[in-house]
Length: 211
Image (tube, rainbow, N blue to C red):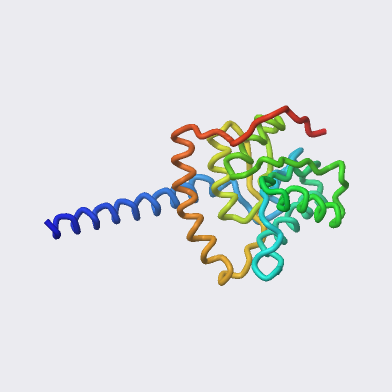
């Protein structure tokens, strides 16, 4: 009996590994042509969708994922590739507001305040992408984040009726990304399940026109 249980355990483990790796490869290669680090390859779009993250990590250090996303958004705007930045992030806690923090740093970096719009209900990547279309009415955007994150966001966009490309922000040093990349593998499986079950954003709300 014990050997039989062990056999089923290893079969289940192998199936899980295949699911995780298969999903990862599917996401990566299906959106490959929609991503770039080269700003010259980005055509003009009205809106850049900047995906939120926390500004600080442990011990008060600047989160390099955050820093490089801000830099990428500013680079796109100053190159005339986008007219507006839609910042989508988490604002569920009283003392934690990703969109406002990112807006302040975008403005400090030279983007006019009236060119920055905020989505306070971008709790997940799925929420950010779906609300970009449903609430802000934008279906043709440049998604701004690191490559691994853009891959997942563009995969969602392709299935939610958005014409999206990804501008890849710089990656932090590899030693800082190991845990993030491991979580990303699982996040892709969760994303696939959400898409298969037609998971909806936590909130919708009134429509907002970006102009």
